[in-house]
Amino acid sequence: MEELSLHLIDLIENSISAKASLIKILIEVSKSNDLIKIVIEDNGEGMNEEEIEKAKDPFFTTKKNKKVGLGIPIFAQIVESCGGRFEIVSQKGKGTKVNAEMKLSHIDRPPLGDLASTLFTSIIGHPDVDFLIKIKTDEGIVEINTAEIKEFLGESSFNHPEVIIFLRENIDREIKGILKGGI
Image (tube, rainbow, N blue to C red; front, side, top):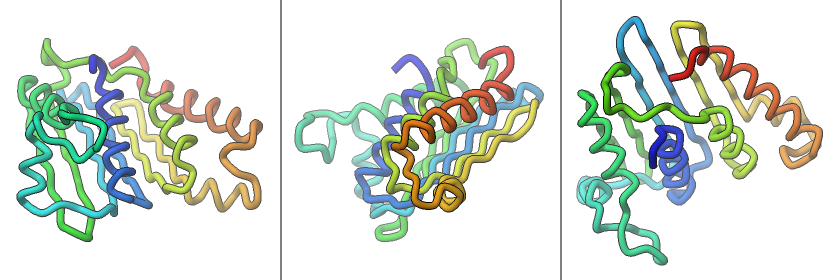
Protein backbone atom coordinates (compact mmCIF):
# COMPACT_ATOMS: atom_id res chain seq x y z
CA MET A 1 0.00 0.00 0.00
CA GLU A 2 1.67 3.12 -1.22
CA GLU A 3 -0.64 5.68 0.41
CA LEU A 4 -1.63 6.21 4.03
CA SER A 5 -5.31 6.39 3.04
CA LEU A 6 -5.11 2.75 1.90
CA HIS A 7 -3.83 1.76 5.34
CA LEU A 8 -6.77 3.68 6.79
CA ILE A 9 -9.14 1.54 4.70
CA ASP A 10 -7.49 -1.58 6.13
CA LEU A 11 -7.91 -0.30 9.69
CA ILE A 12 -11.56 0.59 9.05
CA GLU A 13 -12.22 -2.87 7.64
CA ASN A 14 -10.57 -4.41 10.71
CA SER A 15 -13.00 -2.43 12.88
CA ILE A 16 -15.94 -3.59 10.75
CA SER A 17 -14.76 -7.21 11.07
CA ALA A 18 -14.65 -6.71 14.84
CA LYS A 19 -18.37 -5.79 14.71
CA ALA A 20 -17.88 -2.10 15.50
CA SER A 21 -20.99 0.07 15.31
CA LEU A 22 -19.01 3.27 15.94
CA ILE A 23 -15.66 4.19 14.41
CA LYS A 24 -13.85 7.37 15.43
CA ILE A 25 -11.16 8.63 13.09
CA LEU A 26 -8.71 11.45 13.75
CA ILE A 27 -6.31 12.62 11.06
CA GLU A 28 -4.00 15.42 12.10
CA VAL A 29 -1.57 17.00 9.67
CA SER A 30 0.61 19.78 11.03
CA LYS A 31 3.40 21.29 8.97
CA SER A 32 4.22 23.60 11.87
CA ASN A 33 4.75 20.60 14.20
CA ASP A 34 6.15 18.31 11.47
CA LEU A 35 3.53 15.71 12.40
CA ILE A 36 1.04 13.43 10.78
CA LYS A 37 -1.19 11.53 13.15
CA ILE A 38 -3.76 8.84 12.37
CA VAL A 39 -5.98 7.51 15.14
CA ILE A 40 -8.80 5.05 14.64
CA GLU A 41 -10.89 3.91 17.58
CA ASP A 42 -13.83 1.52 17.55
CA ASN A 43 -16.33 -0.06 19.90
CA GLY A 44 -15.86 -3.52 18.41
CA GLU A 45 -15.05 -6.80 20.10
CA GLY A 46 -11.60 -5.71 21.22
CA MET A 47 -8.54 -7.85 21.80
CA ASN A 48 -6.60 -9.22 24.73
CA GLU A 49 -2.79 -8.80 24.98
CA GLU A 50 -2.09 -12.04 23.12
CA GLU A 51 -4.37 -11.03 20.25
CA ILE A 52 -2.73 -7.60 20.05
CA GLU A 53 0.67 -9.26 19.64
CA LYS A 54 -0.72 -11.61 16.99
CA ALA A 55 -2.19 -8.61 15.10
CA LYS A 56 1.37 -7.27 14.76
CA ASP A 57 2.58 -10.58 13.28
CA PRO A 58 2.51 -10.63 9.46
CA PHE A 59 2.04 -14.42 9.45
CA PHE A 60 -1.18 -14.29 11.45
CA THR A 61 -4.68 -13.39 10.29
CA THR A 62 -8.19 -14.02 11.53
CA LYS A 63 -9.55 -13.96 7.97
CA LYS A 64 -10.43 -17.45 6.79
CA ASN A 65 -9.55 -16.84 3.13
CA LYS A 66 -6.07 -15.42 3.78
CA LYS A 67 -2.82 -16.94 4.98
CA VAL A 68 -1.11 -13.74 6.10
CA GLY A 69 -2.17 -10.48 7.70
CA LEU A 70 0.21 -7.84 6.40
CA GLY A 71 -1.89 -4.69 6.93
CA ILE A 72 -1.07 -3.77 10.51
CA PRO A 73 2.56 -5.01 10.49
CA ILE A 74 3.41 -3.08 7.31
CA PHE A 75 1.66 0.06 8.56
CA ALA A 76 3.52 -0.17 11.88
CA GLN A 77 6.83 -0.61 10.06
CA ILE A 78 6.17 2.42 7.84
CA VAL A 79 5.27 4.58 10.83
CA GLU A 80 8.33 3.55 12.82
CA SER A 81 10.68 3.93 9.84
CA CYS A 82 9.43 7.51 9.45
CA GLY A 83 10.56 8.52 12.93
CA GLY A 84 7.21 7.78 14.50
CA ARG A 85 5.45 5.53 16.93
CA PHE A 86 2.70 2.95 16.46
CA GLU A 87 0.47 1.68 19.23
CA ILE A 88 -2.53 -0.60 19.59
CA VAL A 89 -4.60 -0.32 22.76
CA SER A 90 -7.50 -2.70 23.17
CA GLN A 91 -9.69 -4.35 25.73
CA LYS A 92 -11.83 -7.41 25.12
CA GLY A 93 -15.46 -6.37 24.82
CA LYS A 94 -14.60 -2.64 24.83
CA GLY A 95 -12.99 -1.94 21.47
CA THR A 96 -9.64 -1.07 19.95
CA LYS A 97 -7.63 2.10 19.36
CA VAL A 98 -4.79 2.32 16.86
CA ASN A 99 -2.54 5.35 17.18
CA ALA A 100 0.11 6.21 14.59
CA GLU A 101 2.27 9.33 14.61
CA MET A 102 5.16 10.11 12.30
CA LYS A 103 7.25 12.95 10.96
CA LEU A 104 5.44 14.72 8.16
CA SER A 105 8.72 15.72 6.51
CA HIS A 106 10.35 12.27 6.62
CA ILE A 107 11.64 11.33 3.18
CA ASP A 108 10.16 7.81 3.39
CA ARG A 109 6.68 8.90 4.49
CA PRO A 110 4.08 7.78 1.96
CA PRO A 111 1.66 10.41 0.69
CA LEU A 112 -1.69 10.71 2.45
CA GLY A 113 -3.48 9.78 -0.76
CA ASP A 114 -7.11 10.41 -1.60
CA LEU A 115 -8.48 10.78 1.92
CA ALA A 116 -11.82 12.18 0.70
CA SER A 117 -12.50 9.10 -1.44
CA THR A 118 -11.38 6.75 1.31
CA LEU A 119 -13.76 8.27 3.85
CA PHE A 120 -16.65 8.64 1.39
CA THR A 121 -16.35 5.00 0.32
CA SER A 122 -16.20 3.80 3.92
CA ILE A 123 -19.27 5.81 4.90
CA ILE A 124 -21.34 4.72 1.88
CA GLY A 125 -20.08 1.14 2.05
CA HIS A 126 -21.03 0.72 5.71
CA PRO A 127 -24.29 2.64 6.26
CA ASP A 128 -25.04 0.75 9.49
CA VAL A 129 -21.84 2.00 11.11
CA ASP A 130 -21.59 5.47 12.63
CA PHE A 131 -18.43 7.40 11.86
CA LEU A 132 -17.07 10.34 13.85
CA ILE A 133 -14.34 11.84 11.71
CA LYS A 134 -12.11 14.77 12.57
CA ILE A 135 -9.44 16.08 10.25
CA LYS A 136 -7.17 18.81 11.60
CA THR A 137 -4.58 20.72 9.61
CA ASP A 138 -2.88 24.08 9.90
CA GLU A 139 -5.61 25.26 7.49
CA GLY A 140 -8.57 24.26 9.67
CA ILE A 141 -10.76 21.44 10.95
CA VAL A 142 -13.35 19.25 9.23
CA GLU A 143 -15.73 17.15 11.29
CA ILE A 144 -18.11 14.53 9.94
CA ASN A 145 -20.68 12.84 12.16
CA THR A 146 -22.69 10.29 10.22
CA ALA A 147 -25.20 9.85 13.07
CA GLU A 148 -26.12 13.52 12.68
CA ILE A 149 -26.34 13.15 8.91
CA LYS A 150 -28.61 10.11 9.29
CA GLU A 151 -30.84 12.03 11.68
CA PHE A 152 -31.05 14.93 9.23
CA LEU A 153 -31.87 12.58 6.33
CA GLY A 154 -34.70 10.90 8.20
CA GLU A 155 -36.20 8.24 5.94
CA SER A 156 -33.69 8.78 3.12
CA SER A 157 -30.68 6.47 3.11
CA PHE A 158 -27.03 6.91 2.25
CA ASN A 159 -27.71 4.84 -0.88
CA HIS A 160 -30.15 7.34 -2.40
CA PRO A 161 -28.50 8.82 -5.53
CA GLU A 162 -29.05 12.44 -4.46
CA VAL A 163 -27.61 11.73 -1.00
CA ILE A 164 -24.58 10.03 -2.53
CA ILE A 165 -23.92 13.03 -4.78
CA PHE A 166 -24.42 15.47 -1.89
CA LEU A 167 -22.08 13.54 0.43
CA ARG A 168 -19.43 13.08 -2.24
CA GLU A 169 -19.37 16.76 -3.20
CA ASN A 170 -19.30 18.01 0.39
CA ILE A 171 -16.69 15.56 1.63
CA ASP A 172 -14.47 16.34 -1.37
CA ARG A 173 -14.83 20.10 -0.96
CA GLU A 174 -14.29 20.16 2.81
CA ILE A 175 -11.34 17.75 2.97
CA LYS A 176 -9.55 19.03 -0.10
CA GLY A 177 -10.07 22.55 1.20
CA ILE A 178 -7.97 21.93 4.29
CA LEU A 179 -5.42 19.71 2.57
CA LYS A 180 -4.26 22.43 0.22
CA GLY A 181 -0.99 21.78 -1.50
CA GLY A 182 -1.21 18.00 -0.99
CA ILE A 183 0.26 15.96 1.83
